Length: 630
Image (cartoon, rainbow, N blue to C red):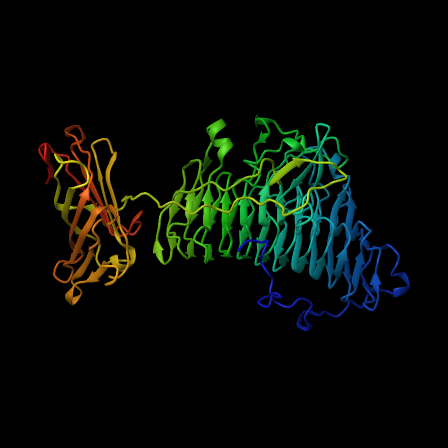
């Protein structure tokens, strides 16, 4: 399910905002501001509360420390004003102990804007002198802003945003600007935001004197743009246009504009934990602009390829989150990320739990994503046994303890996600300002079905008493036969339970150079008498047998027999695989051979696999008619 079609069912799961148990008595020293001022721009420098019986149309400015603004459920609404609530102080003034609560804000450019006035002129090294601290915004709703819902501007620190409902913003729901840090975003509902700026309906833009119309993915629920060491926890994300949380660094875009300032910091050291993501195209994207072409933004950061600059979003942690029907759960395109103890649910087998890797940096600079730790995650994606994937290469990755469909699995190569021609652009065309394009907007291609992971056996045992025979090599291809047998002694008891009916098995035969001459996968599934294929359990639960009675079975597989000898010899299995009507091109130069058998394909993270190495002299022999290895 994509964010385009996700329907938010009244957020029935979520906690009630502004419920009676959250109501607080107004401070007796708080000033009451009456409805006679409802059409004024209110500036407060001491604690105050609003009369909730009227609508406040010009917004409220807070410019002093030790202030609580309690809206008491009042509605602050405008379609023409910039800020619903503006918390601001000059950069030579430390602002602290400010609380905003119980407000309903609608419209405005930003529902709430927190700013250190003059921050763009701060020299490096003194940005955090006279800093903000203990700024709390709680128990409020922010709806339908034209731009960002809540904007935490440059070098703002120690803001807590909690128990808020943020919906319908034109841009990101929450924006943490470059240089801000040490903020907390917790227990919020961040839903259906980001459909206007760079949105799917499209808009005009100018480039090199030409006019274009472009369609974009819109913006994310939370944008962490060069903002550091923030904590984002216990939030609910659903239906946001581009996705849930994007971490990146502004590349110094549009230096000709008044809002430009030097971007000195990346999106480093953030912790994203215990959140729920539902129906998003992307849940969390680390380094979301690493491989996006930023040419139209006229960036000041140095290019390493035409239109490409390094993004900066390293040392971030994504842990203990839950993803429901999210196309790409976690995308990792920068270094030293930790993706740990997350859970992924989906009914679409093309969905991916974790995708690791970035293209342009890897191919041009030779710097694949480095030092990722993917640990203890659990995926329940129907039809996808291996939803943890890498693309474009990776180095120094730690991958351990991850499960899919209740079984340990590995990390293997996947399919790169579709990308637009430029950052935040799906497609563009030359256009006349008087005639914008019509019709359905283009969309990025959905993910392709994931290819199967290659068979591997990194944690297995040595197959004892092995024998491999390949016969009828002198006749035309198509009638070759193969027989493999051997004994495996696996750790006892089997953990998880050994069950070829569920997992199937696989057999690989490699030549002396590691080239795969035989690569057979025997699927799981109980025997179907009508189809005349599948697995049967042997009498007294002493093992399993696979048969295929078709004239031309896939891979030429004739039968597989696994005898379980564990009752007398713990962990011991005898195995036989036979095929027919094969075509095996094996020369004397290919010898010696190695056979790999997996009882938990493809990657056998359970250790339920083994290898037979016929490496000693004389272990493999070839005649014109056959190869025998023993």
